[in-house]
Length: 150
Image (cartoon, rainbow, N blue to C red; front, side):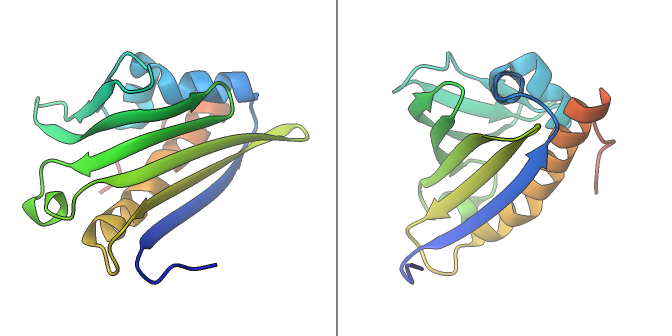
């Protein structure tokens, strides 16, 4: 059922890898930097801990809290933009990452939502997530991430 009081973005991709390797790719900062186009993800990966995503130049892009961890199946993050005032003022969003085995591949589902109809943040992540996840898939399947995408 669609909730008119929310805005959401859902992305599903299938990656030729294992759930364990995908989990490691989603939670290892050195590996994340490769497919997040140089961004650094800082946290200790514990429920209740803060996290932040930092641009290569040191500016903070996004912050939040680790809400749920179920290795290697599910990761839930509270998410708030920090570098665009019009997105920051919308408040905290929620990002759910679900990993499911699907035969010889793994199904990755990203659900990013906020309790705000017509959210500009969801508009922004709907452009960003496909780039990030395409780079992640390419990196896991070929050993090389995509080059920076404009």
